[in-house]
Length: 115
Length: 115
Figure 1 (cartoon, rainbow over the protein chains, first blue to last red):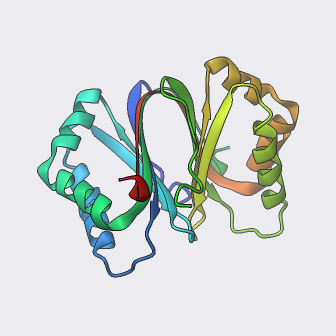
Figure 2 (figure 1 turned 120 degrees about the vertical axis):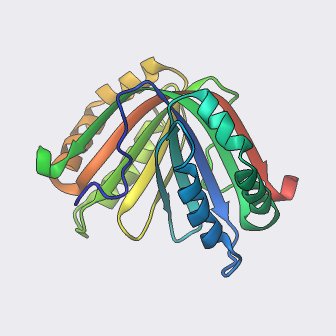
């Protein structure tokens, strides 16, 4: 299955939240558990379409979450458990992060098996 | 320097090209050299603003390149050396990729040292 890790999205337009971050070096700080919980929780958010995420050995990571509307993004932002996780991220987990909200206007995919 | 790896961007609006990909397992296939060359070349592209990129040990990676206009994205797409690299990517380097072009509407950053 060569498409593991990829979000299966409808045709544009839709919205993307690009979150790039550098983790602090700490292990055993609860990050992995909260990240897994947020990944499960966002799937319950109406308007959530999918997400893709990766992090290199240097601690720099990019997560892109896709939503069908700005309203869905704002509702996810207001989620109480997500808000608490963001506060913990600033307090403990991240050195630096950048968040960018964008409207996807076009998209193109390619798969070796289908080409 | 906690902001290594992050693009330094102007205030929105600007454009993002989100490229997520899964690499084939091959080593020594010229990928690293071409990726480094493309990274240098895109910096010469008028309208290029910056990029962020990471790939996990599982071969799944995300690169987000930022441009000041759709015209700059199209000009980069037409670059002959970049076009040849994309063809080589399909022929040799990738199992699957997704490309999404989006207009960044708002952005927010945070740094531990500045907080």
